[in-house]
Image (tube, rainbow, N blue to C red; front, top):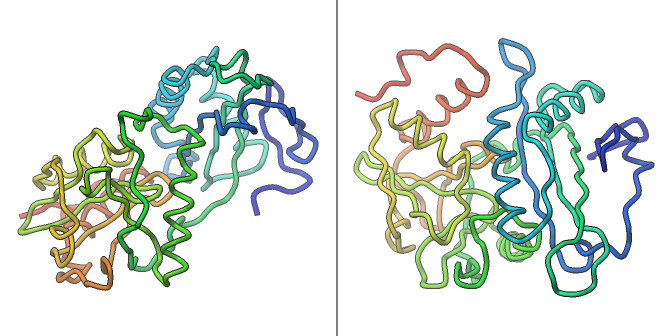
Length: 297
């Protein structure tokens, strides 16, 4: 699904075949989940293949590494150039790009000694599908910001996401919704959430969530469309039965949610603010001209 015998990646300073790349089985990242990564989208826009907000993603990768002590001797502009070259060598247009920074062998519980960088890419459609999601409040909570750098995109953190997602799927749902340690709504396993009530969009405030780049983009879009966004703590009871809700993320993009714990949202998606945001987001990433119908009266 992700690579074949002809796939080219950039690893440890070289372009190599994915099937021939080698890493060290004693690496600190493999043993302790001590690594950082990004998920970046490329789109076949009206102006050619463009990576969406690469600077922001690579700067966040730098921040994530530095937050947890992973050496990061990489230059953002160079990494953007390498990413475009990876797309070119694999003849990819609409693609998902995965930069990953891993650490060399170190079995002590101390910061990384050296790091290696992988940049891979593959075709990947709608991560969460293209239908309305039925989600469930997970029994697993997001990690406390007092225990971890929750604003860093660190690999080991995503074990929490895997457990929440699999629990939801085992119960017959499409996806999970995690609460923070105090019982307030946090985010999805790999996406931020927005909730519509009476013409206003609400989204959990920063602190216990990943400050998503798509989340920030959606807030910018809402400002342009005249949609009020309020960042605040939300109880799950405030989300159930609201007018509408949607997840946002680089992989997920903007996708509507149909129900929470089998309680449906009351507004048809075609009439929801999220639908307008979804169209505007697609217009933005494909570099199309804005159309009048996207404006909110």
